[in-house]
Length: 213
Length: 213
DNA sequence: CCTACCGATCGGTAGG
DNA sequence: CCTACCGATCGGTAGG
Image (cartoon, rainbow over all chains, first blue to last red; front, side):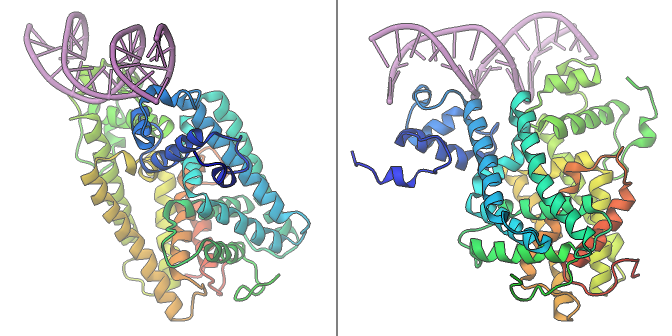
């Protein structure tokens, strides 16, 4: 058995997991993103990590618990990344751009998590589903407030701030559905371009051909 | 449970269905949109229309066949609506706007179909899944070509035409996820605003405060 | 349109 | 970590 190495690779936001537990979680991300949560059986998951089904339960509480852990840790990490990227800036254009970049960076760097997070809310039990929707609403509020602020200052030009908010988020969320790590554009290039597209969408009339920081 | 009135309300593009068959299809749309295809059992569906499970099979071939019928008729109707709205116009700005309007109109007027269409591709058997992805790609091409055309003419200003295409479609597809028929905005108002947002997203610098037709 | 029924498979447990 | 096993439920059929 090797000592360390894997510990360093483990995601920092999730509770510290054993090597096996991390393997199970990782396989679940891959299978659930590809075939959906309900379309994936515990047998599929066991085979993906080279175990029998009962052994999985040494590492997870249940299929549903694993889904909840993934959904909430993903949403919480997204909130953290967004807040880290935008604190300290008050200019709505800069905030919208940095927030979009953080969001898209997350969506493409944690593609499976984001894709599952977008699609599997319906698979959560009602109580945790409600809590997650609340977190998502809190997240949406950040964008909405930025857009309202920019519109009030005459920096953004939209006819409905609510629709512009949905439009920006819809645009950003779809990244997880098509991003190809082997494609021509890196995570950073995509994030950067989306930051500019957000500004254009919001009717920002400043320069978007170069970085307006 | 309502009696009659259903024939008049039946979608015209789908093969003509008996009253019962239309009821079953309609209930499937509601349940699948709310709880997902795999999260809905045939028992749920039977109860929704006041039948026992075996009786459903007098009206549908199988659960999977019903999904395929819904997914393909939805995609085909979307293609028709898009083409009907955009034929005869060559100006990329007008095409992008009219195409977006047609798309969003469809997404909000056929919300359940659109939502299922967006999410359940993974639930189709591999062969029909491939065919549907092909149709979706054909649909995306229409937007891509319009954006490329507009960029070539210097009407649109984006740094990646591919990303702008994904952004427009992502923005539009999300409408089915939040649209509320009882909300403040009508289907037509949402479509119109999204048409303008598409132009802004694409970096169109003409007037978007009033209708530029 | 129903009752009766079925093989397959589901997530998960017992017990070592 | 495994073998053996389980109750529940799945989509669907037989037969009238």
